[in-house]
Length: 532
Image (cartoon, rainbow, N blue to C red; front, side, top):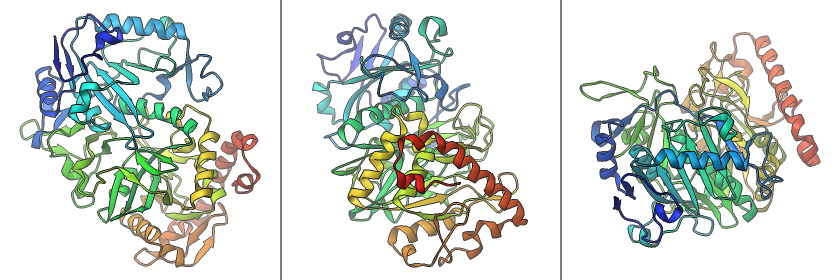
C-alpha cells in the first residue's frame, strides 16, 4: 500500500524498487512521530520531542564509507582518503539490499540540498526507520507541499540499519557500509542506526558536485549581521569545536550551523535544520538551542532521561559524549528565512587544541589561512567518531576530511581564489584547552571566545595591538577589552612555561610533518607561510 503525497510518475516502483510492504511518502512531523512510536523506535519526550537511542553506533563510521570506482570518477576522487568499492561489489550490495527490503515498510522523503536554487540538488531519502525520515526532514530543505506532485529526485539515498553487509561479496570493510555511486546517483547505507550518516552522505555528494560549478563547499556554520546579509561570517571546524554554539549568536542572524556553499552569488546553507551537540548544554549559556530540546518534533539522540518525567540529563554521557538534537532551522528565532548570505567578510577557523598551546584567537594572512585550512588541526572530541573517548589531536584537512571526496588542494585553491576575489579577514580561534594540556588545563571560557569573536566581527579587534607569535608566525592581540590579558598569551597561563615550550615545539613539528604531503601541490606563498 502507498500512503502520503508523491509524484505519481515517480514512486519507488518507477525506480525499480518493488515488492515492499507499506510505503509512506513525505509524511509530516506528527505522522512520522506516530509511526515511530507505533514501531517502538523511541519515546515521546517533553514538548513532543522524540527520544531515541541509536544502539552501538553513536557516531560516524568514516572507515566504512566507500566510493564506487568507475571511469568517470577514477581521476577526480581522493583515493587516499576514500575507500574504493568495485562496481560489481556495489551491484551485489544493491541487489541484496533490495531483496532485504522486500515485504518491509519503508519511509520516503523528497527533499532539497542547498538553499540557492542555482546550485541545489533534489534528493530522495528512503529509510527503514520512521524517525530517520523525521531526522532528515529536519536536516534537508523541505519543498512546498504542492511541489511534491511533480518532484523528481536526481539522487537517491537508501538507509537500512537492519541490513548487514558481506565484506567479501560487497567489497567493503565490515557489516556496516556507506557506499556512494556517483555514476548511478545512488547512496546505500546499512548496518548503522546513527542518523548523521544520512546528512553527511548528502554533504559528501555536494562536496563532489559543486567544485565543478565554481562553488566552494564548506564544512562550516555561517551567520550575518542583523538586516545586513553582506556582513557574513563563516566558521570552519570539525564536530565539537563550537560551530553550532558560536554561530547561534543572538545578536546576528543564523544562516546555518554545519554545511554551506560559497558561489559567485554569495553564501548559502545546504540544510534546513541544525544538529547540535547537547552534552553539558545549559539554558543560561545557549538558551536558543536549549529551548529546542522541548519543542515538538525535535529528535533527541542518545540522551539519558528520567523514565517517569522524561526530563533530560545533559551531563550524563554514559551512552555517548556525542548526544545530539536535530531540529528545523526555524526553531532558532534569529535564523534567516532565506538561508542566504553575502560573500564572507570574516572567515573563522575553529580548532580545539588539546595541547593547550594555541592562543584563543589569531589573525591570519591569506596564505596562512590556506595553510591552516589544508592542515585542519583540531582534536576529535569524544564520541563524534566510534572509539574516540577523549580529545584526540588530529589533522583533518579542510576541517572536514571524512566528507572530502576530492583532493584537498581543490578546496584549498577555491578558498584562496574566493578570498582573493572578494576579500575577507581570516582568524584562527582555539576553543580547546588553556593553562595546560587536556587533563591538566581548563577548557577555554566560552565567554572569552564570544567576546573575541564579537570584536573580530564588528571590526574593533583589528584596531588593537598585535604581536607575532614566535612559534606559529601569526598575529595575536595583546590586549582586548573584556578578555583577561593573560588568556591572550597561552604561555603565561601555564604554571611551568618550560612545559608550554615543549608542547609548542611538539605541535610545531606535528604541523610540519603533516604538511609535507601538500608541498608538491601548493604555491610558494603558502609554502612560505608553513610552520616549522
